[in-house]
Image (cartoon, rainbow, N blue to C red):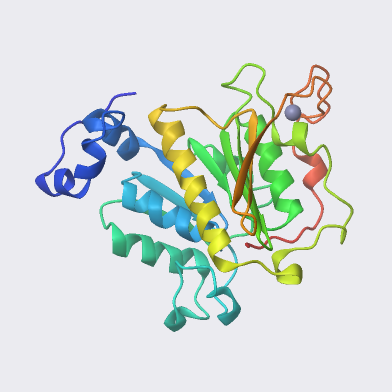
Length: 275
Ligand SMILES: [Zn+2]
């Protein structure tokens, strides 16, 4: 990668606490500037995620969401504001991210992710973040990321709990994909969504911020990747656990005799929404 190490004085001041870090420095900051990250879902996870990525100086951030801001979103979706109720969420999140850092390029997509548009979109980004709250989009995105060889940083929240992992079998030999962990979507109605079961707003904030941290680590190539591990946070018990994930040799998506080779199984009407 050709890195542009020419920073303006304002950039040096804005990113000075990054540049001071031995593991970031000017080179790391230049990597962040050159990076292209796609945030899917501008909701409870996508809000802190998009804001921290913009603040960190990620050069290009795509934000996908086809929803509009509602009053019931504002308990957790901190990229949106009361005076933007009714606005498109992707546009509203772009306004919030730009207000923090006008130097970054934000690409809002007011669209529902589907089998026809997902691969074209993924092709334009290096790293993809799943901040959605439905299994239709989660599985579509997980399949598309393996087919397009993109790193997927995936977070999920419900009630007082959060989960986080990184899936990059194309880079991590023996690393699992999302389907190694969850081979099939659960039967409709068997797992409640946040709109059915509720979620503590701050829990989405913590998980979206952890997700942003893992994105930055992947770009900077520092620390231990969360690939092959699942972080589980129980907010009520104030307990973090990390469990090991292994690639499933019989996985339909990344296994030896993989049967999922395109997105044809996703060509049915689905529902996309964000946490
Ligand atoms: Zn797999």
